[in-house]
Length: 242
Image (cartoon, rainbow, N blue to C red; front, side, top):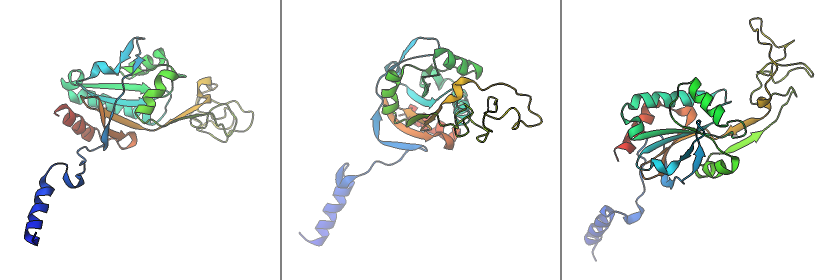
């Protein structure tokens, strides 16, 4: 076989699908999940105390966020971003796109707490919780790194993750931010409340929102600290139109 013929054969092979180890191309603004990961079915409980099954959403694009209601920083921003998305989607929202929030703190986030969190922010999508046994397979399937800890460097009873004043003098009473009532209050502060016992442990988790396609496959991952709502919208609509 002469060199010219070899070149023709090689060119033809390169044009055939699946030949020469062709690779999947990234098509989303968020991180493409390649290969797609099947979203395993689950049954959790919504804020009204009703069972909620993932498989009932097959045929729709699903945006799933993981958070906990005591989270003081990223989680409220994620909720606000999702609220913006729901408004921008217009008629597509609910009909072709569904949003879900799932807790990573079932020890605190019961149905009442989840419902209060949603109502306080006028969020109209399901906020789901369950037992640790029910949630663990969900966290694993969606690759949610989760760790709880109760480290408290200054021993004031407020976990370090919540403690605004990590060097409170020993034995001093503190407010809800872990700041000493005697030595760590600003002049403007009139808060004189002992810390709530729910702040005695902290939840650390992977901050990411996953978009699931109509065939129940995880397709896109958005890091919560890098959200661009307009680009998230583009990714959602791309899946809607598939």
